[in-house]
Image (cartoon, rainbow, N blue to C red; front, top):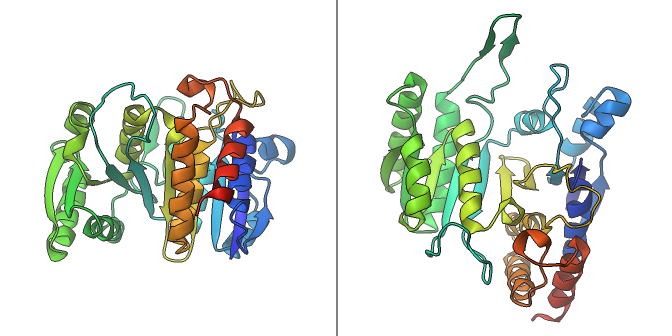
Length: 331
């Protein structure tokens, strides 16, 4: 197994090494290929992600990714958008369930849902024009893209409660009517029960009644926004992992950004990156190791070994080291 390691910018340079220490505790035969990619590289060389970088990544099985700073500069091209498109990582999988012993800021209800976000088109298709007095962004929704993200949602739903919520804005956007109709067709063919929600109503109801939902499938922008809403329910972005899955490659990353305000202070929460490693282990077929990792995270939180965002006083490496030590003693 060959793993491309891309820390990126800001706290990405801290949380990814912390996550790798946890991965190393399992002693697996994984070849790590470190790559410098991101805004820092762009500032120095004029290119955040080179063709050579892409070639190396395509030669790897999967990617462990940190975070990227994206400046408000029209000459800067999004690294993640290029990776998702060129690797065809069309399914962004973001699970949300409270971790044991984490104080929930918004809701004390028990919930466990997954947001399945189309990852390569929609408002993030990258087709834009910027002029002096007007700017254009083209929203692309294709049958192929809608069908395969719906199939991904069905695959996940079949292993859970077999319930899918299709999230859209079809009352305003014709392209969302198309997305909804294609998704309904796929869901029915798979024998999965479904309902649908307008995205604004979904954001409202997700806060009030998260326990109602199991698997949500939606378009790129809506999935991005709803994921941050959901992160508040579980205790913050520092706890939320994600997987970007394609037919040939996969990329695993925390959903948080580069957080330049706390970069270099050693206080970033590494749990999102560590749980992204858990998702990577599951993708590799290493379910036993993934479950051990999850139990180790729960144990460390229960002991109160947490970073300041969770009310603790521990450093990022304190958390990472504690999880690694528990992995070494768990059966």
